[in-house]
Structure formats: C-alpha cells, structure tokens
Image 1: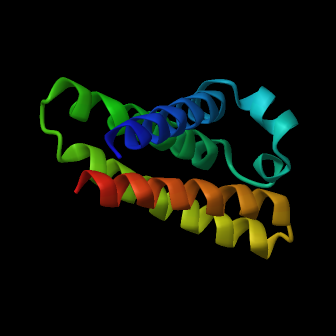
Image 2: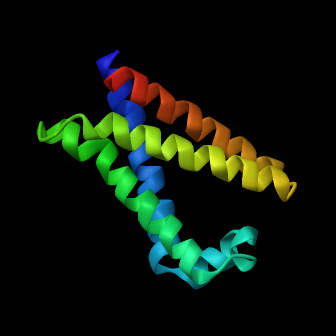
Length: 117
C-alpha cells in the first residue's frame, strides 16, 4: 500500500506542479491552453496556480523528509477541495471533460489523504 501511495503522490505532485507553474508564471500559455482562463482574471489564475504549485510540493516533501509529515494529508485534502470546486466550475461552464479530470484528481487526492492519515 505504501508503494501505491508514493506512486499516486508523485504523479499528483508532478501534475499539480506542472499545471500550477503554467498558471502562475506563464499566463499567456495558460490562456491559450485552457479556455476558462480567458474568462477569469489574471490574479485568480495566478492564485490558483500558486496554490496548486505549493500543494503539489506539500504532497511529497513533508512526508519524504519526515518534517511535519502531517502536512501531506492536509495538502491532499486542500487539493481535493480545489478539485471539487474546479469540477463544479467546469460543470457550470458545460466543460464536461475538464470536470471529469477534476473528479479523477479529486479521487486520487482523497486516496492520498486517507492513506497518509
């Protein structure tokens, strides 16, 4: 089970850090890649990006370093909430594929949170 948790943590961390860094630091690229970014303020997109980037780091670093490992499930829960809100946002915009991706990431984040509590 520990190996499965590490794999999911690593994949989630990578996905959140990549997506978060694009939203936080490459706004124009994010605007071209994601249709919802055009309808949102730059400040909101940057805030979401920084949150995802820090959340991705917090999925791995605290538990791997043994320094405040309780931060890992907290980060997983926080990212699950972000994905839940993102799924509702995409459903409201009738972007069903985006909502589906959010639900999958939500499920993996919940798996990490439960597994690391």
